[in-house]
Structures are given as structure tokens and as C-alpha cells.
Image 1 (tube, one colour):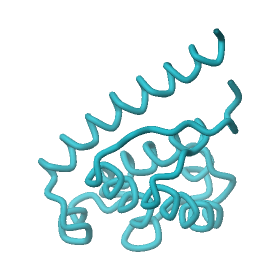
Image 2: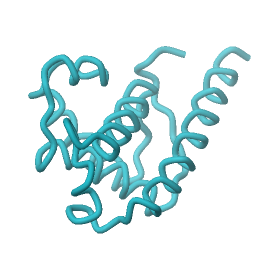
Image 3: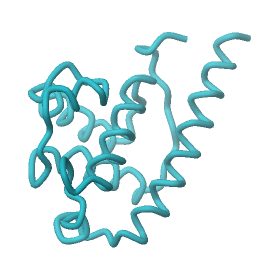
Length: 127
């Protein structure tokens, strides 16, 4: 399986919404640097915004994403939620409407689900 093959992952609406919010926050209170954009798997800060819009639309529609896109959406959400230096941090609950407690529970489910599904997709491809 390559990073561009599409993988459908069934997620709850709130899980998709937290990922959507995570990507959207980079266009709001978060402050991404070029280096951080690259570390998250994007080409640049501009790519975080441009590709982020595409990913948000696909997430809300329930569309499958590439392995690379699932990972970028998750890591961008993890960083923007947790970091008060680069991300929304302390403002997350104000700007998204999700409490820190609810968000961390949702993020942990997302981490487990996405990892399991991407591993499963890799194994299915190897068969």
C-alpha cells in the first residue's frame, strides 16, 4: 500500500468534527511555522491552509483519505489542540466548543482507530 491509496475509516460524527476543527484552527488562532508544517507532513504553511480545506471537506463528507492524509489530519489536530505556543492550546475549548476533557477522549479514540485501520489496510494490501 502506498501513501496515496485511499482508506475509508468509519468515524463518529464528533470524531470527524474534532479533526475538522483541528485543521480549521490553523487558519485561526494557531501560528504555524514553515518547519512545523513540514514536520506535520505538509509542504508549507500555505499547504496547511490549502490542503487543510480539502481535508476538512472530505472529513465532513465521510470520504476516504490517503494514509498520508489521515496521518496529517491527526497530527495537525494533536498539535493544534495541545500546543499553546503554536496551536490553539488554552483557547481550544473557546474556539471549537469542545472541552479539553472531551477532546482528549475523542483524540485517544481517533489515535487508536486510525492506527488500527491503517494497519489493517496495510495487511489487506499485503494479502
